[in-house]
Image 1 (cartoon, rainbow, N blue to C red):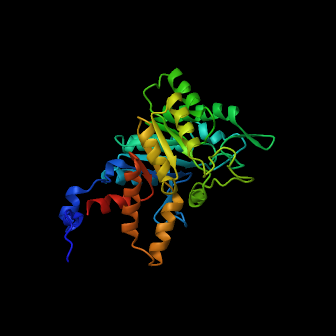
Image 2: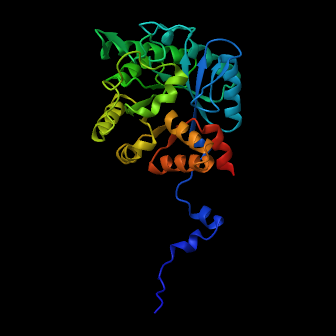
Image 3: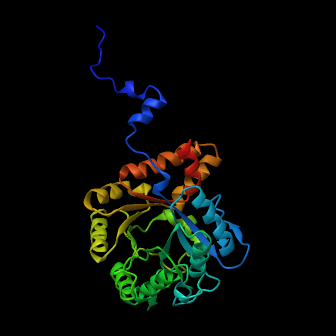
Length: 325
């Protein structure tokens, strides 16, 4: 006897128009933030080997890239700086004429209506490659807070629209919020890298930003990958300290953390689709092992479906075209 199901879910999958009509999760260009690397010099467009299609850009080249992003509809960029000199105290991070400060001013002059977010960390600026001040071989938390606050303040004075502290120092959001408020910048939002894991997926970024630690690792301040409850505790602290947006980084191995964050907190959730996630898809696509565009869209959709409101991704420019098709 033939069995006929009462309900047939396949009816609504029969063609693309039906699938589009009932699609539960849709990634939009409005969700995207485009990370960019700015370096010293003029006319510099240095390819990043492990991140095809991405470059270290001098300030003049960066402005052109940001203009293209704006024209594509991307609402925001996230800046990382590569100074010409590094030292023990990360002086290039908060210098008035530092590389990121120069970049902010140029962007605001050429593309004033794009949102400029700046990464607030010290690893690109320290000669030892760590995210804070070193004392007796250890990354010292509280002295680092002062430098992070000074760095954030210098970015905002240059014209940054939002700051994003990523050093994973205890109290960094509170220190930055207090410094900004004291100087009259209470309207500037903070996007905190709240659950930033000590991940192997940052490898290509460290090539791009020239920020690999010269000794040891970052496991004493970035989060241990097996921990989930600790991530909620970190995010709770950041919200209490004044974070306007909280972030999970990386995205794909931590979709469960993104989902928990979206259920636990009534603030926007950002997710960073990091360099290693980008590089894996690019490498596999180059070898013909998968369809790169489909993998990109599926990845971004999974991050959005997990609960992210904002997706920071190196796929941003490519995604715009794919999402329109």
